[in-house]
Length: 276
Image 1 (cartoon, rainbow, N blue to C red):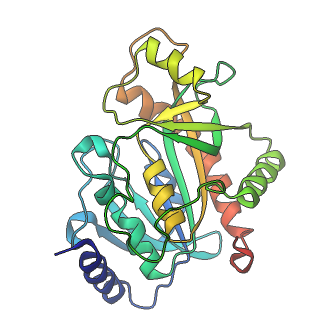
Image 2 (cartoon, rainbow, N blue to C red):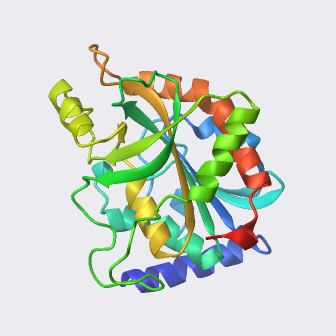
């Protein structure tokens, strides 16, 4: 079965399972950020293993379920846990849910992640709005036969929505939340970076580094979605001690309350009729 047939089959299954739900906003909750789901009024919860052709999340801290409900007064669909290239999946597989979201009518993607800080001005626990990215994952999600509705050659100069970034910054100011901005670099993982690699990536112009998000944003833009990305800085390249996944989850969890405010009010104030 080719990818288009899988998308069609899974989308049909999802529409039958979700009934009258019609979310136009999708959220991806990254490592340690699953607690954000407590802010969602969940009406339908579907484990990934029940969904046809869906990968299964194998990472600790990723619940591995799809949530349909309401947040900020709007219908949303959320991934509690995502998929990664380092788990053995292709990026076409890790971004398969984005294709399904498009078929369900999603117009806006809000993606979160845990990331390492490269910018020396960043501190553990800071949140960084992604303004641009550098993709070093060696498997492009658009490689192969072009899948509608996107073009064969996708421009990415507007990958991250300026209006959503501006709205998030206004919300942060209102609540006295410190919100950084910067460039996110995605590499393959699963190892954390060496000190030399941190220095190299900083020289490339990156402010934060992680193992996700970029393939999802690429496919979302290929589907015509408006995108917003935010990173929680959970470890730092300036730190000389060994980084553990447990430390990453703890730092992300501490930032969850502020991120919940940002996401909730972003959705509340989001006019879908003004989608760029």
